[in-house]
Length: 372
Image (cartoon, rainbow, N blue to C red; front, side, top):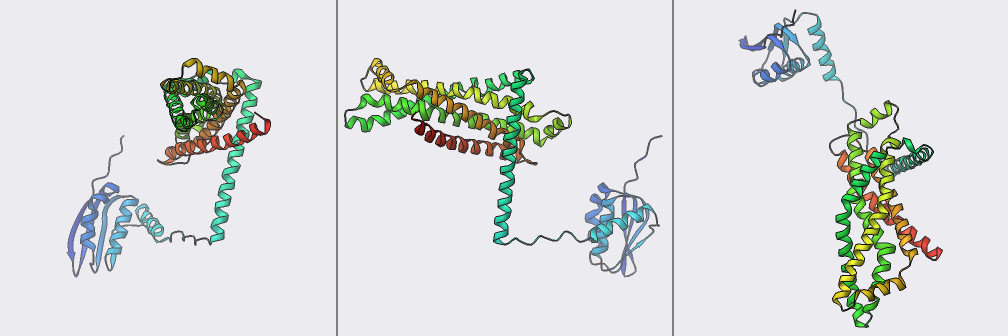
Protein backbone atom coordinates (compact mmCIF):
# COMPACT_ATOMS: atom_id res chain seq x y z
CA UNK A 1 0.00 0.00 0.00
CA UNK A 2 1.67 3.24 -1.12
CA UNK A 3 1.39 6.52 0.76
CA UNK A 4 -0.56 9.21 -1.05
CA UNK A 5 0.67 12.78 -1.24
CA UNK A 6 -1.49 15.42 0.51
CA UNK A 7 -3.85 17.46 -1.60
CA UNK A 8 -2.35 20.74 -2.88
CA UNK A 9 -3.22 23.59 -0.56
CA UNK A 10 -5.71 26.25 -1.61
CA UNK A 11 -6.55 29.64 -0.14
CA UNK A 12 -10.06 31.12 0.01
CA UNK A 13 -10.22 34.83 0.89
CA UNK A 14 -13.57 36.36 1.79
CA UNK A 15 -14.81 39.20 4.00
CA UNK A 16 -15.85 38.40 7.56
CA UNK A 17 -17.71 41.34 9.07
CA UNK A 18 -15.30 44.25 9.48
CA UNK A 19 -12.36 41.93 9.00
CA UNK A 20 -11.37 39.19 6.62
CA UNK A 21 -11.30 35.37 6.67
CA UNK A 22 -8.51 33.30 5.12
CA UNK A 23 -9.50 29.68 4.75
CA UNK A 24 -6.74 27.16 3.99
CA UNK A 25 -7.47 23.73 2.56
CA UNK A 26 -5.18 20.77 1.84
CA UNK A 27 -1.56 20.17 2.75
CA UNK A 28 0.23 23.37 3.80
CA UNK A 29 3.84 22.29 3.18
CA UNK A 30 6.90 24.22 1.99
CA UNK A 31 5.89 24.22 -1.69
CA UNK A 32 2.36 25.37 -0.88
CA UNK A 33 3.61 28.04 1.52
CA UNK A 34 5.93 29.46 -1.16
CA UNK A 35 3.09 29.49 -3.71
CA UNK A 36 0.49 31.08 -1.42
CA UNK A 37 2.81 33.45 0.46
CA UNK A 38 2.44 36.65 -1.67
CA UNK A 39 -1.35 36.41 -1.98
CA UNK A 40 -1.83 35.64 1.71
CA UNK A 41 0.43 38.50 2.83
CA UNK A 42 -1.44 41.02 0.69
CA UNK A 43 -4.75 39.82 2.08
CA UNK A 44 -3.62 39.96 5.74
CA UNK A 45 -1.68 43.24 5.78
CA UNK A 46 -3.37 45.76 8.07
CA UNK A 47 -6.62 43.74 8.48
CA UNK A 48 -8.55 44.07 11.77
CA UNK A 49 -9.57 41.45 12.71
CA UNK A 50 -8.15 38.52 10.69
CA UNK A 51 -9.55 35.00 10.96
CA UNK A 52 -7.39 32.09 9.87
CA UNK A 53 -9.64 29.13 9.14
CA UNK A 54 -7.52 25.98 9.36
CA UNK A 55 -10.30 23.41 9.55
CA UNK A 56 -9.46 22.04 6.11
CA UNK A 57 -5.70 21.76 6.65
CA UNK A 58 -4.70 18.12 6.32
CA UNK A 59 -0.91 18.48 6.68
CA UNK A 60 1.42 21.13 8.08
CA UNK A 61 5.16 21.51 8.20
CA UNK A 62 7.49 24.16 9.59
CA UNK A 63 7.32 26.34 6.46
CA UNK A 64 3.52 26.35 6.61
CA UNK A 65 3.60 27.18 10.32
CA UNK A 66 5.92 30.10 9.64
CA UNK A 67 3.48 31.39 7.01
CA UNK A 68 0.59 31.30 9.49
CA UNK A 69 2.60 33.08 12.19
CA UNK A 70 3.73 35.76 9.75
CA UNK A 71 0.09 36.33 8.76
CA UNK A 72 -0.74 36.73 12.44
CA UNK A 73 2.01 39.34 12.76
CA UNK A 74 0.95 41.25 9.64
CA UNK A 75 -2.64 41.69 10.87
CA UNK A 76 -3.55 43.92 13.83
CA UNK A 77 -5.37 41.01 15.43
CA UNK A 78 -5.61 37.40 14.25
CA UNK A 79 -7.62 34.41 15.42
CA UNK A 80 -7.00 30.76 14.58
CA UNK A 81 -10.03 28.56 14.00
CA UNK A 82 -10.50 24.90 13.18
CA UNK A 83 -7.07 23.64 14.26
CA UNK A 84 -7.82 20.97 16.83
CA UNK A 85 -5.37 20.03 19.55
CA UNK A 86 -3.00 17.48 18.17
CA UNK A 87 0.19 17.18 16.13
CA UNK A 88 -0.60 20.19 13.93
CA UNK A 89 -1.29 22.45 16.91
CA UNK A 90 1.88 21.16 18.64
CA UNK A 91 3.94 21.94 15.55
CA UNK A 92 2.51 25.46 15.41
CA UNK A 93 3.29 26.00 19.11
CA UNK A 94 6.88 24.76 18.70
CA UNK A 95 7.42 27.04 15.72
CA UNK A 96 6.01 30.01 17.63
CA UNK A 97 8.34 29.30 20.56
CA UNK A 98 11.34 29.01 18.23
CA UNK A 99 10.55 32.33 16.52
CA UNK A 100 10.00 34.10 19.84
CA UNK A 101 13.25 32.79 21.31
CA UNK A 102 15.82 35.61 21.42
CA UNK A 103 18.93 35.14 19.34
CA UNK A 104 22.45 35.06 20.72
CA UNK A 105 23.69 38.35 22.05
CA UNK A 106 26.54 39.88 20.04
CA UNK A 107 29.85 39.62 21.76
CA UNK A 108 31.24 42.97 22.87
CA UNK A 109 34.29 44.17 20.99
CA UNK A 110 37.56 43.36 22.70
CA UNK A 111 39.81 46.21 23.77
CA UNK A 112 43.13 46.75 22.06
CA UNK A 113 45.11 44.58 24.46
CA UNK A 114 42.49 41.86 24.19
CA UNK A 115 42.77 41.85 20.39
CA UNK A 116 46.56 41.67 20.67
CA UNK A 117 46.28 38.74 23.06
CA UNK A 118 43.78 36.97 20.81
CA UNK A 119 46.05 37.37 17.78
CA UNK A 120 49.03 36.16 19.82
CA UNK A 121 47.17 33.05 20.95
CA UNK A 122 46.04 32.36 17.39
CA UNK A 123 49.61 32.62 16.12
CA UNK A 124 50.85 30.46 18.98
CA UNK A 125 48.33 27.74 18.14
CA UNK A 126 49.37 27.91 14.49
CA UNK A 127 53.05 27.61 15.44
CA UNK A 128 52.26 24.68 17.74
CA UNK A 129 50.41 22.98 14.91
CA UNK A 130 53.37 23.45 12.57
CA UNK A 131 55.77 21.99 15.14
CA UNK A 132 53.43 19.04 15.66
CA UNK A 133 53.21 18.47 11.90
CA UNK A 134 57.02 18.58 11.65
CA UNK A 135 57.31 16.03 14.45
CA UNK A 136 54.76 13.72 12.83
CA UNK A 137 56.60 13.95 9.51
CA UNK A 138 59.89 13.14 11.23
CA UNK A 139 58.39 10.10 12.95
CA UNK A 140 56.86 8.94 9.67
CA UNK A 141 60.25 9.33 7.96
CA UNK A 142 62.00 7.28 10.65
CA UNK A 143 59.31 4.62 10.29
CA UNK A 144 59.93 4.53 6.53
CA UNK A 145 63.66 4.05 7.15
CA UNK A 146 62.92 1.04 9.36
CA UNK A 147 60.43 -0.43 6.90
CA UNK A 148 61.03 1.08 3.43
CA UNK A 149 58.72 -1.47 1.76
CA UNK A 150 55.77 0.27 3.43
CA UNK A 151 56.43 3.47 1.50
CA UNK A 152 54.21 3.99 -1.55
CA UNK A 153 56.93 3.92 -4.19
CA UNK A 154 54.54 4.20 -7.18
CA UNK A 155 53.23 7.40 -5.62
CA UNK A 156 56.80 8.67 -5.20
CA UNK A 157 57.51 8.02 -8.87
CA UNK A 158 54.32 9.82 -9.87
CA UNK A 159 55.31 12.91 -7.92
CA UNK A 160 58.85 12.74 -9.30
CA UNK A 161 57.38 12.85 -12.80
CA UNK A 162 55.01 15.72 -12.01
CA UNK A 163 57.49 17.83 -10.04
CA UNK A 164 60.61 16.97 -12.01
CA UNK A 165 60.25 15.82 -15.59
CA UNK A 166 57.34 18.11 -16.38
CA UNK A 167 59.28 21.10 -15.01
CA UNK A 168 62.39 20.53 -17.13
CA UNK A 169 61.21 22.73 -19.98
CA UNK A 170 60.36 25.70 -17.75
CA UNK A 171 63.54 25.30 -15.73
CA UNK A 172 65.73 25.19 -18.84
CA UNK A 173 64.08 28.26 -20.32
CA UNK A 174 64.35 30.33 -17.15
CA UNK A 175 67.91 29.18 -16.49
CA UNK A 176 69.02 30.14 -20.00
CA UNK A 177 67.39 33.56 -19.68
CA UNK A 178 68.83 34.16 -16.20
CA UNK A 179 72.36 33.33 -17.38
CA UNK A 180 71.95 35.47 -20.48
CA UNK A 181 70.61 38.45 -18.50
CA UNK A 182 73.29 38.19 -15.81
CA UNK A 183 76.08 38.03 -18.38
CA UNK A 184 74.67 40.88 -20.43
CA UNK A 185 74.12 43.16 -17.43
CA UNK A 186 77.57 42.31 -16.01
CA UNK A 187 79.26 43.14 -19.30
CA UNK A 188 78.16 46.79 -19.10
CA UNK A 189 80.28 47.77 -16.05
CA UNK A 190 83.01 45.20 -16.84
CA UNK A 191 83.57 46.73 -20.27
CA UNK A 192 84.55 50.05 -18.67
CA UNK A 193 87.57 48.37 -17.10
CA UNK A 194 88.31 45.85 -19.86
CA UNK A 195 87.39 42.97 -17.54
CA UNK A 196 84.82 41.13 -19.65
CA UNK A 197 86.87 37.94 -19.32
CA UNK A 198 85.82 37.73 -15.66
CA UNK A 199 82.10 37.54 -16.47
CA UNK A 200 82.13 33.68 -16.41
CA UNK A 201 83.59 33.80 -12.90
CA UNK A 202 80.85 36.10 -11.65
CA UNK A 203 77.97 34.32 -13.35
CA UNK A 204 79.24 30.80 -12.63
CA UNK A 205 79.74 31.32 -8.89
CA UNK A 206 76.45 33.20 -8.57
CA UNK A 207 74.51 30.46 -10.35
CA UNK A 208 76.07 27.48 -8.60
CA UNK A 209 76.02 28.89 -5.08
CA UNK A 210 72.88 31.04 -4.97
CA UNK A 211 70.74 31.78 -8.00
CA UNK A 212 70.48 28.28 -9.45
CA UNK A 213 69.06 26.59 -6.32
CA UNK A 214 67.00 29.67 -5.42
CA UNK A 215 65.32 30.04 -8.82
CA UNK A 216 64.69 26.30 -9.06
CA UNK A 217 63.10 26.44 -5.61
CA UNK A 218 60.83 29.29 -6.70
CA UNK A 219 59.71 27.17 -9.66
CA UNK A 220 59.07 24.20 -7.40
CA UNK A 221 57.11 26.33 -4.92
CA UNK A 222 54.94 27.80 -7.66
CA UNK A 223 54.25 24.54 -9.47
CA UNK A 224 54.53 21.72 -6.97
CA UNK A 225 53.98 23.38 -3.60
CA UNK A 226 50.68 24.82 -4.74
CA UNK A 227 49.72 21.48 -6.29
CA UNK A 228 50.42 19.67 -3.01
CA UNK A 229 48.27 22.17 -1.11
CA UNK A 230 45.44 21.98 -3.65
CA UNK A 231 45.37 18.17 -3.70
CA UNK A 232 45.48 17.71 0.06
CA UNK A 233 43.19 20.70 0.59
CA UNK A 234 40.56 19.16 -1.67
CA UNK A 235 40.82 15.90 0.24
CA UNK A 236 40.47 17.80 3.52
CA UNK A 237 37.39 19.68 2.31
CA UNK A 238 35.83 16.43 1.06
CA UNK A 239 36.60 14.81 4.46
CA UNK A 240 38.78 12.15 2.83
CA UNK A 241 41.57 12.84 5.36
CA UNK A 242 39.13 12.21 8.21
CA UNK A 243 38.04 9.00 6.51
CA UNK A 244 41.66 7.80 6.36
CA UNK A 245 42.11 8.47 10.07
CA UNK A 246 38.88 6.62 10.87
CA UNK A 247 40.16 3.61 8.91
CA UNK A 248 43.39 3.68 10.95
CA UNK A 249 45.61 4.97 8.11
CA UNK A 250 48.13 7.67 8.97
CA UNK A 251 47.72 10.51 6.42
CA UNK A 252 51.30 11.65 7.04
CA UNK A 253 52.82 8.34 6.01
CA UNK A 254 50.24 7.69 3.31
CA UNK A 255 50.07 11.09 1.61
CA UNK A 256 52.74 13.46 2.92
CA UNK A 257 55.85 11.30 3.00
CA UNK A 258 55.87 10.41 -0.75
CA UNK A 259 55.50 14.08 -1.62
CA UNK A 260 58.32 15.13 0.72
CA UNK A 261 60.66 12.48 -0.66
CA UNK A 262 59.86 13.45 -4.25
CA UNK A 263 60.46 17.15 -3.55
CA UNK A 264 63.81 16.44 -1.88
CA UNK A 265 65.00 14.19 -4.72
CA UNK A 266 63.90 16.41 -7.58
CA UNK A 267 65.23 19.74 -6.29
CA UNK A 268 68.98 19.02 -6.81
CA UNK A 269 68.21 17.85 -10.35
CA UNK A 270 66.28 21.01 -11.12
CA UNK A 271 69.03 23.15 -9.61
CA UNK A 272 71.68 21.37 -11.70
CA UNK A 273 69.60 21.84 -14.84
CA UNK A 274 69.15 25.53 -13.98
CA UNK A 275 72.92 25.89 -13.55
CA UNK A 276 73.72 24.25 -16.88
CA UNK A 277 71.12 26.29 -18.75
CA UNK A 278 72.38 29.49 -17.12
CA UNK A 279 75.98 28.73 -18.07
CA UNK A 280 74.84 28.08 -21.62
CA UNK A 281 73.09 31.46 -21.76
CA UNK A 282 76.19 33.14 -20.37
CA UNK A 283 78.34 31.43 -23.02
CA UNK A 284 76.10 32.82 -25.75
CA UNK A 285 76.66 36.36 -24.48
CA UNK A 286 80.41 35.77 -24.18
CA UNK A 287 80.43 34.57 -27.78
CA UNK A 288 78.76 37.80 -28.92
CA UNK A 289 81.47 39.73 -27.02
CA UNK A 290 84.20 37.94 -29.01
CA UNK A 291 85.37 35.36 -26.48
CA UNK A 292 85.67 31.74 -27.66
CA UNK A 293 84.11 28.89 -25.74
CA UNK A 294 87.48 27.56 -24.62
CA UNK A 295 88.23 30.85 -22.83
CA UNK A 296 84.90 30.62 -20.98
CA UNK A 297 85.59 27.01 -19.96
CA UNK A 298 89.08 27.88 -18.74
CA UNK A 299 87.74 30.70 -16.58
CA UNK A 300 85.11 28.41 -15.07
CA UNK A 301 87.67 25.69 -14.34
CA UNK A 302 89.98 28.17 -12.67
CA UNK A 303 87.42 29.89 -10.45
CA UNK A 304 84.48 27.54 -9.94
CA UNK A 305 85.14 24.59 -7.61
CA UNK A 306 83.33 21.40 -6.77
CA UNK A 307 82.41 22.68 -3.31
CA UNK A 308 80.38 25.48 -4.94
CA UNK A 309 78.30 22.94 -6.83
CA UNK A 310 77.94 20.58 -3.85
CA UNK A 311 76.93 23.39 -1.52
CA UNK A 312 74.31 24.63 -3.96
CA UNK A 313 72.86 21.15 -4.45
CA UNK A 314 72.74 20.59 -0.68
CA UNK A 315 70.82 23.83 -0.29
CA UNK A 316 68.50 22.72 -3.09
CA UNK A 317 67.63 19.53 -1.19
CA UNK A 318 66.83 21.59 1.92
CA UNK A 319 64.68 23.92 -0.18
CA UNK A 320 62.77 20.94 -1.58
CA UNK A 321 62.09 19.59 1.91
CA UNK A 322 60.89 23.00 3.11
CA UNK A 323 58.59 23.47 0.10
CA UNK A 324 57.11 20.00 0.54
CA UNK A 325 56.50 20.55 4.25
CA UNK A 326 54.87 23.95 3.73
CA UNK A 327 52.68 22.74 0.86
CA UNK A 328 51.47 19.61 2.65
CA UNK A 329 50.87 21.49 5.90
CA UNK A 330 48.81 24.12 4.06
CA UNK A 331 46.72 21.41 2.39
CA UNK A 332 46.06 19.39 5.55
CA UNK A 333 45.26 22.58 7.47
CA UNK A 334 42.70 23.81 4.92
CA UNK A 335 39.39 24.93 6.33
CA UNK A 336 35.89 24.32 5.05
CA UNK A 337 34.12 26.25 2.34
CA UNK A 338 34.55 27.24 -1.30
CA UNK A 339 37.66 29.36 -0.67
CA UNK A 340 39.54 26.79 1.40
CA UNK A 341 41.51 25.19 -1.45
CA UNK A 342 42.47 28.53 -3.00
CA UNK A 343 43.60 29.90 0.36
CA UNK A 344 45.65 26.75 0.98
CA UNK A 345 47.40 27.04 -2.41
CA UNK A 346 48.16 30.72 -1.80
CA UNK A 347 49.53 29.97 1.66
CA UNK A 348 51.70 27.20 0.21
CA UNK A 349 53.30 29.43 -2.43
CA UNK A 350 53.85 32.39 -0.10
CA UNK A 351 55.09 30.23 2.77
CA UNK A 352 57.34 28.22 0.47
CA UNK A 353 59.05 31.31 -0.99
CA UNK A 354 59.51 32.86 2.46
CA UNK A 355 60.94 29.62 3.84
CA UNK A 356 63.48 29.18 1.04
CA UNK A 357 64.65 32.79 1.38
CA UNK A 358 65.11 32.32 5.13
CA UNK A 359 66.95 29.03 4.61
CA UNK A 360 69.12 30.65 1.96
CA UNK A 361 70.11 33.41 4.37
CA UNK A 362 70.90 30.94 7.15
CA UNK A 363 72.93 28.73 4.82
CA UNK A 364 74.85 31.74 3.47
CA UNK A 365 75.92 32.71 7.00
CA UNK A 366 76.75 29.07 7.81
CA UNK A 367 78.85 28.60 4.67
CA UNK A 368 80.69 31.84 5.39
CA UNK A 369 81.50 30.71 8.93
CA UNK A 370 82.69 27.33 7.65
CA UNK A 371 84.88 28.99 5.02
CA UNK A 372 82.97 27.55 2.05
